[in-house]
Image (tube, rainbow, N blue to C red; front, side, top):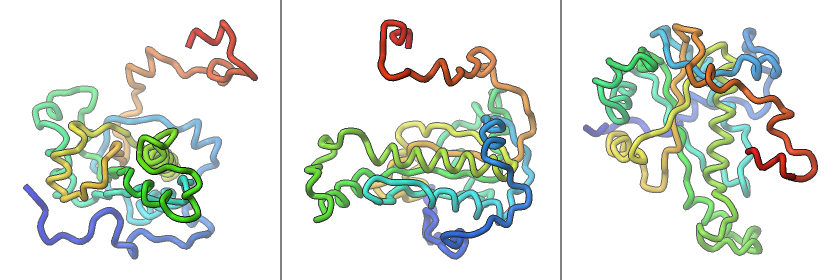
Length: 237
């Protein structure tokens, strides 16, 4: 099923999401950055309690503050709020039998906000073909030393997650199966855009720690940092 005659996708309804480039946050419930880091964790169970329009604007605004290679700014977001769009999304990425039977992700589809994150490799080819970037000699995607488009989209994804926590909400970031082919058909997504994942956000119904976190506790800074150079002990990675 395709959506016909819908309003433009991917945050093109600018008046709904735009914020002043620099502004004092009006969110009285926001928390300090170190507290955000301490609170940040993923949730898989949500209530159907709505997320406010102001919260969504604050969350999406965070994506506009992210760095991007060559200032390409090619990452795009598909923001799904209404129940019909969200149900179409879940039908595109999962089977009802899985959603109804799985315990680990029960009530995930109750999350009132879904943000799909898209990368756009072609935009980087275009950007680096312009006069001010031609010196880099990045004439094909294989010439790039790393996938700038994926890195920049990941920056946006992380900023969105922290912004969600700042709104005292919970979230789950997850991958899109089959490279989003069914999702592409359902929402008429342009060929140049590839989904790197989606974020479901809302009010958590459970604060239970996932089994993965229980089995694999967070490493310390000392455990993940290599000082000055690698050595034999570093090979334990």
